[in-house]
Length: 200
Image (tube, rainbow, N blue to C red; front, side, top):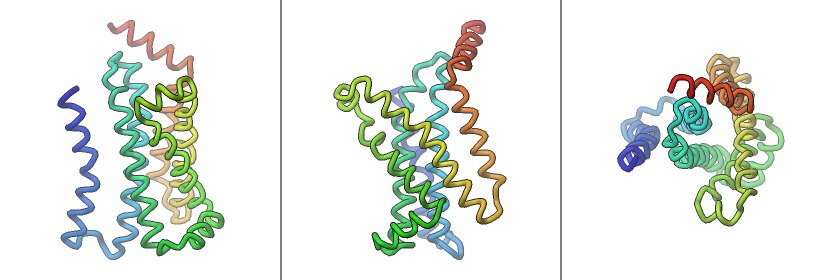
């Protein structure tokens, strides 16, 4: 685990390094802002899916190492979501709060994206041992917001893609998130645990 976490940390930075590399060598296409915004948003969703996958993987394998990676992966989800938002706010909205708010109110997919970031923020801020100790059982309740976040994130992506008649990719992400949420239903969790025990 001592080597695994640093390796995964570096791997999680690869999408950002790729964007920097492409930017340095004019590889961001005809619309760099759209490319960066789309890429960071997609990676935020990918890391959300990977974070949600940690609990099912623990249930299937019985290895607690997956849970030890969950916090770092969740923070990378927040990291890429913040870049996604800041690129939009800075380059698309010119740091104009009124313009940003008007966009949030008028466009449903922007509303869902903004709500997702708002919900992610308290989870990121309390992803430390001090918060766990201070909040006690409330910490667990707070971090169950990740289930709602999964729904708002996929709605954000769905409405955005629906406007472009491109629902194939978002359907895949939607199916993955649905499957990962189903794995958290108590009866499904019990089935996974029984199958693991029968194998071992």
